[in-house]
Each structure stands twice: as structure tokens, then as C-alpha cells.
Length: 282
Image 1 (cartoon, rainbow, N blue to C red):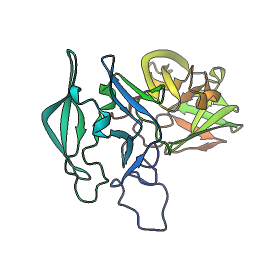
Image 2: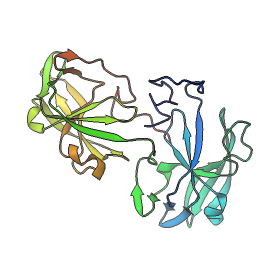
Image 3: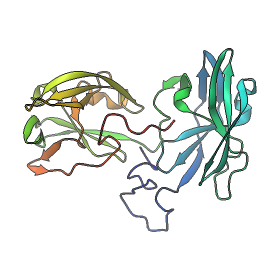
């Protein structure tokens, strides 16, 4: 989340207003250099290594690294017959990537002739993040997607009375929550496990947040015999910025009823409203 996603200032549903004419929601592009050294690995080999990579922010999407062609190994690139068209950038051509016997079809793309008004991305090469084996910013591996430099999380202790229920059934109640405020996302209420009265059952699902770390999930067994799948998540070993929520439990605001000091909160509509994983963008 950040500038370009959800309710961010240039996202599809901006929450605020400008004092100047901004691009129509969903149409913004912003290309900027990064000071980080960025490396991409596939099949045990480094295929891109750059201190001149660019970060493209596109409304509605997570940021993507674009590499100068000279920082990508030409010997692993094979021209593909695939072409796609973006209304904001133009026609993209593709490369398949071959490292030894390992082939990833249509794994990278570039814009040989960007349309007028697009940022200067001509011939810069981008990779599908999840089709590569490993990404590094400096000497640290990243997962999920590149971190947005305009994204942040703030975690605050709260003594608000947080009551969580579903169809009238009490699931949790606490006055010692940690409130997590994250760019372009609804506030999240993390609480000690002992303040959760719902019967929890571990899930096989896990997800990775580039800002908080690896999340594990629990389903909730309801009194009516139904199982509410993946309703709770927890960071058992969070990244340093999220250390205060270690081991605490959090419910999806989108799928339960939350009362704060007796006031029922509206359920937000997000990509997580109907399940754990948001729609993926390669």
C-alpha cells in the first residue's frame, strides 16, 4: 500500500483531496530512482544487479523495479512472441529467461516505444516478482513485492474497549490492544491471545508482508457449528518495525463486527473482504 493503492492519494479510491488538479483516480504513474542496490536471482545465478534501478509506481498496483538493460545479463534473455498493451504505458514486449536448463517463459518485459505521456521507461527491463527465486535490496532478501518508500506502519498501545463478534457471537474483548495504522489500510486491532474467547483452529495458510513479516492464520469454530476460515492472523516472528505485535492476534475488520468503546464500526471493503489472499499481480 502507499501512494498508488486503495485510498492512497493517487490510488483508485483516494481518501483525501488536493488543492490542484490531480490525475483521474487509477491513472497515475510515477517513476523514480532508488539509491538501493537491487539484485535478482534465478536458478542459483544473479541475472540482474543494479545501482541504477528505477521504481515505477502505478495507480492500483504495488511498485515494480525497472532495470537499465546494461544491468541485466543479456545471455539469459530470449525474445518472446508475447506482446501486451497497457493504456498508460503502451505495448510491452517480453523476454523468456533461460539459466542453464531452467526456463521461465515470458518472465520479463520492456517497452520499446512507450506512448506519449508515459514516464521515461523506454527499454528498461522489469521482472515478474514471484517468478524469480530471490530478490535482494542491498544484502537483504525481500519477499512479496518491493517495499514502497511511501508506505509506513505505526503501532500504538490503546486502552479503547474493543469488542469483536460475528452474528451476535462474542469472539474477543480487550482493553489492551495494540492499534496498527498502516498506509491506505483500515486500522487493525491486535490483542493478547487470552482476550480471544473464540475457539481457534490453526490454518495451513501463511502470507508474507514486506513490512511486517510472515503471518500465520487461524479459523474460528462458531457456536452454530460453522467454521469461519482464516479469520485471525498472527506474526510470531515479525520484522523489526512490527516487533510490538509479536504473538498478538488480529481479526479481519472486513469479516467481523468490531465495536470501539461501544460504537459499531463499519466493515471496510478491501481485497481481503472475502478471503486471505488479495488478488495477485505478478
